[in-house]
Amino acid sequence: MELTKNIFFNTDKLVENSEVKISYTGEFYQNNCEKVTVHYGFGQNWDNVNDIEMNKTELGFQCEIKLLEGETFSLCFKNENDEWDNNNGENYVFPLEKVSQELIVLEDEPKSIGVARPLRKTYLWSKKIKLAVYKLITYLPKIISGNYTKKAKNNNNN
Image 1: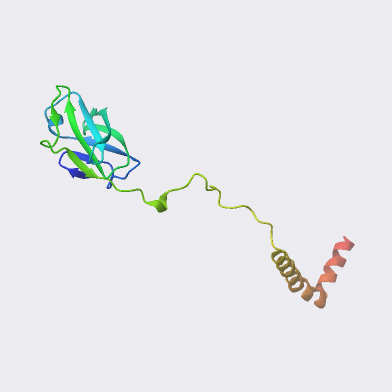
Image 2: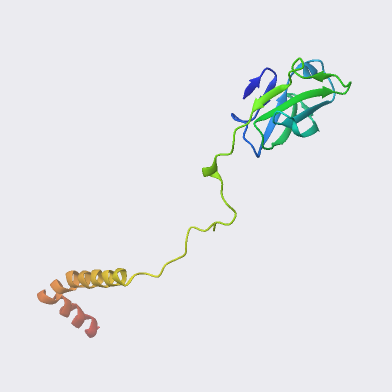
């Protein structure tokens, strides 16, 4: 996702308390700088300010950042000569979205899908009745016709 020219993120939305990968292909990358550091903070007051050295790749300078809480994510870039790319003094500022509450799994909640329950008596009785009906359907015609007793006699003679 490109939110600003030459700055790309690996996600569609910047969400608080998540990881994001940043790719920078701006002025310092185009001028073949060897070392670029991203300077960033959160909110209007640049809370939790931090600096991370970015890795130079063929896709630009890249790094991963843990997004903290705040309404905005602000950043700028510095090269090895202490030159700044700060969007002409305005800094690069991106809105942060809150974490959707329905997706949060609380640690206290059990993670199993349930406990095995014993079979109900009605289920057991229904199985017994089905077995009895099956035996009646299968063996009753044989007993009435006499085929069942003949097979029994033939098995006894052998």
